Length: 235
Image (cartoon, rainbow, N blue to C red; front, top):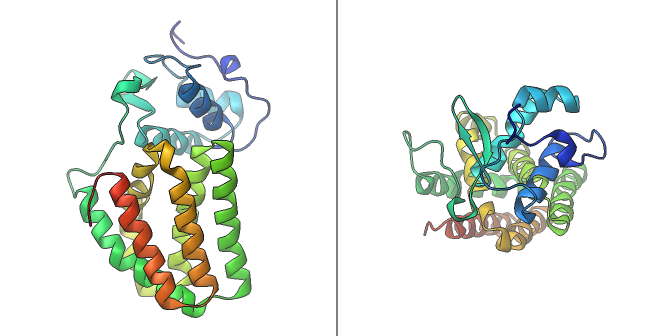
């Protein structure tokens, strides 16, 4: 490890809680509070995984979220570095295939209808699963834990397709899931507007829980339009 790399002791990890609530929670807090300086190199994925006792895929996913939100930059062959504050911007990885606007447009149809079907087919155990996600998002927001918020956001949207009860719709979702997940994370770079994200998911939940397909579909589409707007895309 070079002298400009951040040591794990500097991250002040109190325990071995699962990624992302372990390493990345600490990294994001230190970045946002200035404890990690722009240009500092983080430990390698292997070092983080070995010293924290977590899997490399978990570390990789967590760092991907941070990169998407513009908090770190990945330099091939060099490592992961803290991004400069004036250069932090969301990263779109799929520019060779589509634009974020393309994805938000597709989500309006796919996810709006999935929410509609879920509202018609929801049962109490499924409602409780969804509510655990929104509760976790609210808790993460109040704790300033952007990564946990992002993880539960993804789980919520995954669950909507599952609860739609339509295997064809679910099959359409799977091949493009990574792009849809990425589009969920892009607006989270607007840290001062994260409460909007949480409130919108709570509105979707209430539409589904009340078994009101119209309200559920409208809430989902309103969320997607608002999320796109936070990233600068008008639908």
